[in-house]
Image 1 (cartoon, helix red, strand yellow):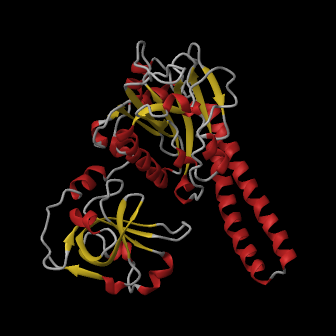
Image 2 (spheres, helix red, strand yellow):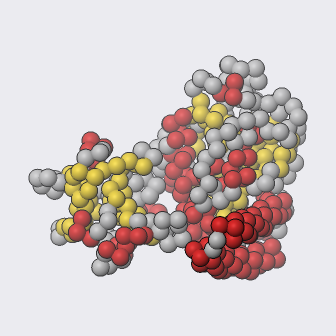
Image 3 (cartoon, one colour):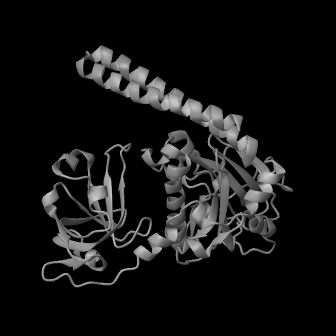
Length: 410
């Protein structure tokens, strides 16, 4: 409890301090000489380094105090800046990896480093790129790299092979990726989340045949989510087969107890027994996402013919790079006020992370709208005109002004 209370105070302090510092530095920067600018840049760099250092210290304490499972025979614990891995030297994959997702992860701007490499802290033979190259399996992160985009050091370390397993390509880039995105979204309402991820390791698992390390291929992968931030503690777990399956979050919800039974691992042994028993029995998806089933229902839509010159969201992939008019019902909106570009997201017909078409409004263009788009457009059937582009494979239109929108009365 004390750790959480101290963190709440320090987080508020550093958040205010960061906003004040940015404002002052930007003001001074606009009037400064070249030499003064260099000095201001160094002050700014040192200040942000200090903020990141404090965050890493908090995460390290939280993982050490509650995140590490009871000892596992033959394991090697590897501690990095923002995660701890329990490595299995026999199977050449982690037993589990524990990390913390902070609330501001959604506003991080550090990009993937993609520098997959051997963990320098492990002085034994371990899996490397030669085992995975052309194997047919993705190098699947246990602690998702995007969960660390607030720190270059943390995101780079997530590419150590102590954090990697052979993962079905379609699962890794499909349902599993959506699960990771959803958990990051939950940090908005839960401040920070402790996440434990790992494969279900059994004897006689199949192996990657190439390379020299005989890396085991797990048949199931789990993810445990713990909200240890007061006043309400809660937990949930998910179990997915290591193959291409639909996202269908509700069909993969399990209790931590069931994961412990499958793996033989005792998670969160440092929690008070009564609290541990309560949390590890929970499997209520609505405790983390009270509107999940409503959103799923809202995302079920009928394909509508909107008339000449208009297409529905199921047709957008055929119009990439073209100017057209896309119509559908607004089922999900979000105004990212703390982001770099203050983007407003308007999803038609399907909710994030299953979105099939998104309207993007950048913060600089919000003044061109006589209303708050994320509030006014919600639950309305609309048409939007513009050029359909793609961002990471997802179709979108960037809207600059209100006249691009038409409200359909149906």
